[in-house]
Amino acid sequence: MRMLRWVSALAGIMLSVSAWAAIDTYSFKSVEQEQQYRELTEQLRCPKCQNNSIADSNAIIASDMRQKVYELMEKGYTNKQITEYMVARYGNFVTYEPPLTAATLILWAGPALFVLLGAIVVITRARRRRPNEPEVSSSETLSEAEKQRLNQLLNDSDREH
Image (spheres, one colour):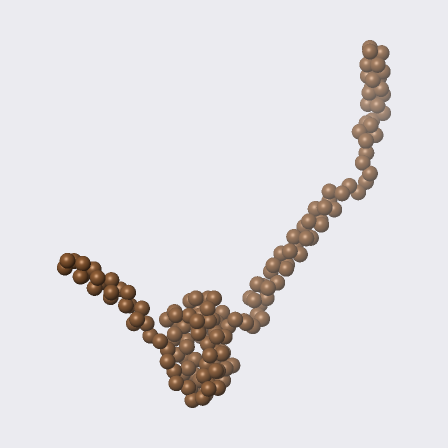
C-alpha cells in the first residue's frame, strides 16, 4: 500500500510538469501595439520548429524571440527594424519571405535548370539515334568479288535442289 502511494505521488508530479510551463503575458499601451505584436510574431519563423511561427511555437527560443520582439516594440522600433534585428541575429530563415540572394536564386532556379538540362540531353540523344543517311542494304556494302562469290554460291545451291 505504501508503494502504491509513492507511485501515485510520482505519477502526479510527472503529470503536473506541464503546469510549470510559463505563459507569455505582456501589457500593451494600445490595441494597435498589441496587433503589431501579433502580426510580427506570426511573420517570424521559429528556428527550432521551422514550420511554426514564433507565435505558435512552444520552443524556448521562440519564447525568447517573442520577449525580444516585445522589448524592441517598447523601445519604439518599427516592424522593419525588428525584422532586420531578427534576421541579423538568426539569419534569413526566420522570415517566411527571404530576400532574393545568390543562395536563394540557386534554390529557385536549380530545378528549372535541371529540367532544361534534361530536355537538352533527351533531344540530343534522340537526334543521334536518327540516321542521317538512308539505310544501306548488306548487298551494297559487298565488294564486287564478294558479290560474284555470293551469286555463285546461290546458283550452286539452286542447282542442287
